[in-house]
Image (cartoon, one colour):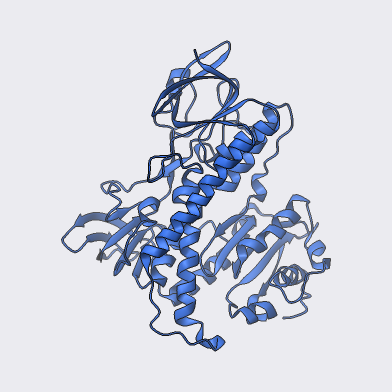
Length: 475
């Protein structure tokens, strides 16, 4: 006899656990299935984001930034520090503690909201008049019956053809977070978010880091002016970034790995490294889901096909997050999770892809929302642009971090904000003001007229909005 639920969520990552909590808040009897295991074999709720993605990478970035400051920036503050060393084991232990705190926090939230949790892998078995039978393969076998199913199974790292992840020498994001000693030479394939963040961590700790990128442009999805500023900053820090390369054979030897590639000029090159991180994108996690058992439609990438409301090809089956179309971002998954739970309850859930913020947690940080200048030019939309450098911001000077700028793009006629792009200190926090403004269809003038605290980094946002009308006050 199957255990019956109003809503069954398959996957306990940011999209899944948030969907489960919101559904429970709305009065549904909810179950959530997740197979992540901690080092002891117990449940580790939170998915890729909490276990081998967003959370642990930020912990390592913070630790490595402290180390970098102690070695290179304390002296300018009058602080003497010598023989500074990094205990990589302790750094990783702290990272693991941060992850566990998040795992435990989600378990607490499940108990608080009376959500039934099943530790194992969920898969569709059959569909019937009463709902869908879901099998849970774990320590014990379970059979569940759910009226509504929300699939939130996330994504997996895409492997480079001919170079499978062994997580010892060829690393995915998972292995990159568990490197036990600082590699002398580290290679990365892919200069996206994961590549730049992990490259920054190990570069700060002393690795000689080279990033190989297949595309001819750096951070092609980012506003071109921001990407140029970031490239200049990363290169100055010591990251070696080669663009327009074609990676060939990767061979192992006693010392590590040898990567054959052709550079942008067509010249044959070889890169020898101790370890290689491959970050060339992610693929939807639908293998073993049992989609074929119930006739759920997948696209050519293996992603679940959904409409604008996250409805699949099956009645009462929904899918959210990395396993469907749209940006593979934890916060996008969370918003879809809330929206789907509310739609199941007959409400009108809302997700606006145009105001989903993007962040790269390097130093300088990079954050943006809305359209880039190149996108506006390509679409033919008339726009105005304004920017303000952190070099002219008092708070940034006091921090000792004046790299970068804030940039506003607004409609030439209505002044509606079309995009905001930031490269510089705490860009990840500053971008939220732009997201709120764009959700309310604000104009650049609206931000320019709002009082911002002095001294604060947010004043750069106000000044960039003023710059749209060519009337900055401090530059």
